[in-house]
Image (cartoon, rainbow, N blue to C red; front, side):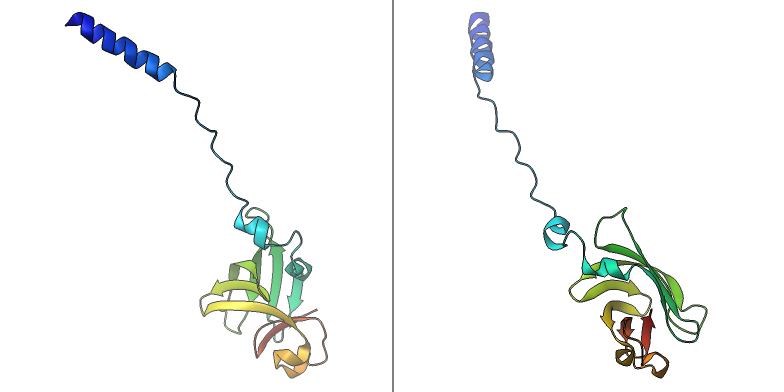
Length: 137
C-alpha cells in the first residue's frame, strides 16, 4: 500500500513538472480614452476664464489627474448664491458634458447671438450651456 501511494505521488509530481508554461496574459486593450479622445481635444482651447452677464462667470481648467479630455468647471451660473459650484466635465461630441444640480448639461461653442443675451450679441467667441446662459471672451 505504501509502495502504491509513493508511486502515485511520484507520478503526480512528474506530471506537474512536465506541464508547459502557460501563455503570458495578453496586455489589456488600449483604454477607451486613448482611442476616443484625440491627443489634443478641441475643448482644450476653452481652458481659461469666460465672462457672462450680471456677474456670471465660468473658469475651465484641465483635470490632468484623470487624463486628457477631462476638465474642472468652476462657475457662477445663476444670480442666486446657490447657483455656483465646481463640476467635473468631460470632452463629448460637440462640447464638454457635465452635471450640476439642475441636471446634465453640454457646454458648446457659439457666438454671442447664440447665447440669447443682448449684452453678448456682438461677441464672437462664446460658450453656451442653454439659451440665456452663455459666457464669452
